[in-house]
Length: 231
Image (cartoon, rainbow, N blue to C red; front, side, top):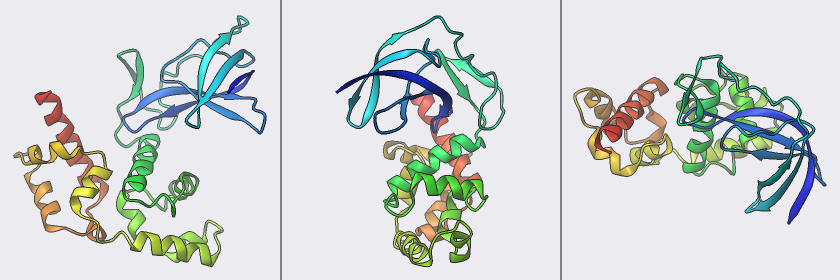
């Protein structure tokens, strides 16, 4: 299925490692279409593009540029206002506390733990915007009162809470995978700098006793550094 249509809007997106990418909003037959691209491309609002749909994702085939001014790459992160760096022709935010990065991490976390049927990306966005979820562990201590502030019905709140509660006995190794740690790297994490953090994990086998995100972040950062040195 190919579609020739107009670009009607534009926004920036971010992935869980901080890479900033453009997303173009297109006119679609049944509503707006989002066209995410991996790098900065010479497309402007008003241009005509040819796209095709593969595995529920639209892919750019061609662009008919009408010499309009291109959107300028941002100098600061659209999500946290930190300075962006250009690495391997990609714009990257290196602020580990970036709200945009955390949301992407949160989406992956929920997906790996099998909570996607209870917590949609839209609901997660609202939880973050309301400052109800600012750390991974916040998901597991959220209350009925918190969910009701979002305007959800009691029945839906109970369904969400049952789903979250059902994941309390997930192993620590699964939690590590959910926050982005490859299984093959876990044995290499016991170093002088991570020993204390790792011991906490060893002593906390259940997800309901998770340590806060700052400690999780420290472990993930060190693991990635170890992986980088060994690769």
